[in-house]
Image (cartoon, rainbow, N blue to C red; front, side, top):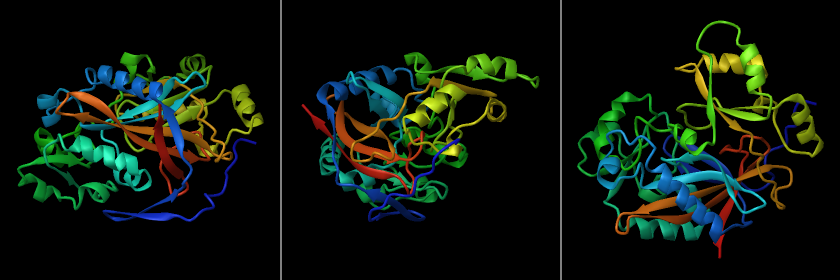
Amino acid sequence: MDGVDFPAAQMEAAAIKHQGGEWKTNLSPCMEYMSEGAVLQGIEILKNWSGVFPKANTWVGKNCGVPSLVVRIDCIVDADDVIRPYEIEERPCGLGLTGLCNQGFAENLKRVQASWPAIRWVQSQYRATDDELHFGPGLTLEEAVNHDGMLLVRSRPEETDFHQLEDRSVSSVSREGDKGYGLHFGWWDVISCMHDGDLDWYLTPALTTASVLKPVQGTRSRHIKVHLPHDQKRELQARGVPMRRSDTDSIPQLLKLIRGQPTSQMYRQPFVEPMRLTHQPSRNAIYRIFYGFNLATGDWEPLGGVWMALDSLIVHGTDQTVTGPLLFRE
């Protein structure tokens, strides 16, 4: 059997209002904890990451020396209490949702936010967000152009009309979702299809182990695919690891995906198996931990976060995802 599709979470769903409709998620009261050591690892990662992420022409990059005032690390914590990152989200969504299910996060964010200038968020018709739960009503592009203060711009990188707001932005705009930092950390490498020949001979040895392909620049889990060699796929299935048919692709399908990218390149990360939480045994899980940059101290501060669980190897926010509070434990 190529994959197993589990039913949606069987619990009451809380509707999260956002610009453009409703964002539905399944909130769980079950708490997960990260150790102080794991949390501090995230701070050290961000210190290094701040020097390699492209800051473009943003206000925060020019005036604060960091790519964003608030970021999120999506990761697991392994048996040795070591963070295994999937991504660093430099303009993370989910601030309102996280504050809704994690009161400590909301309080920590407000404390760090006191060191920031006043911020308004800018809405895009192509990007759902829950920012109004924390930052209040958003601005349209037209309103933002005439606004004098700092902005959290929620457009997609390809929406070039929003790039004019970059010099007042507290996070990325044109460079949102740039994943080049992973090369610096050695988390992934480049895999490319630079001509029209049959590159199956190249991809096959390059993907002899379980791997995840991700775009050079991308957001919202688009174009992320898992490659599992047959024996490794069977081993995961034998252990009951949840997966969906749509999670994985064959070599020819991956070849087509890579060629369809703007530069005919993607990044390849060794597969990091998601966690299995005791209270979510039929789903895979990850941690999403937020950090805020305190302008008064010049330090990254942990804010708290959420755990997320889904019946997929690619855990992300959907109306079937189960979400709960992620706290710190000393």
